[in-house]
Image 1 (cartoon, rainbow, N blue to C red):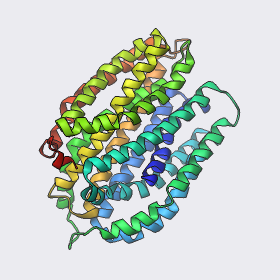
Image 2: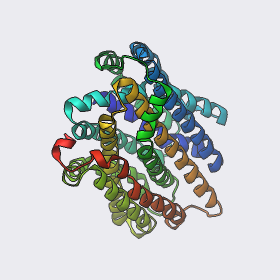
Image 3: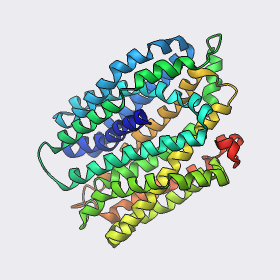
Length: 405
């Protein structure tokens, strides 16, 4: 729980602020900034997938994972902490690639441990704890957006980034120990899998991964776009990530109850459909007044929390019930593909936000009405996710409590 919280602190911070640093601190063209963010995400995705394949083909590498984590964790924390100090696009890109590379090295095997832990403690229970940790990490990062957006104090970004990196470093200290203990406890195939075996593993999870990739792109674009709006009550936009984070954390028990009542697939489909409708309310909400805007942001956060919980739970069940997936190596490949496609979606979200921001360059400031093009496009993508999100996990996503716990 602690290590997952720390990992999400680091990841949420990079995801929330890297594009902001590129566009606001370095004053890069938003399209160029979005392209750089996408390049970093694509590199991260390629590493996730390649690392997953290597662990599937050579499970014995697992014995080296603690040493790899000991080196990778500090590199990720330092490269994140130094991001506000960059003064050129090249330096920013180097730090982003260093972060993405080191993060992938411990993130993929750490995620693969979900399979044995879920078998011991239940898929929904484990993913509820993961969702609480992820939401708590996002909430801390959301709190940091308040001073960043409202104060222009020199040196403040560096203080916030370094502080966040130090907290994450302390929380990630148990990761090498976890990899040493838990990875070795997982039974492996007696024979290394062939390329056709790995292809079967990839194909059985790919449809679900692609659906979540589209969802990540849509929701990420909205989040990044909000950081660049300017309205009369600017504190509302500064408080929006905090409202989103609080709601995301608060509704985890409600989404768990929905999953037990109606099933993972149905709950995920409902969440995507509803969040598409809420996104269409955002352009109106930011102009009607603080109370209405914060209410819509809170509803948005509650639905994001549901999607995060149900998507990870559905994927965990899919991995556990798929006969082609056996052992930690196969699980690493599956989770590597899942995180790789999600990161591609998040990279595309920066491009979407960058192109939207560039299209608003003729305005004095991009206000609430400027959100319409972004809102219409992302809402349509959420409806697509609503239609397809449940299909790949339907066979393991029944409403019975036994299937979920």
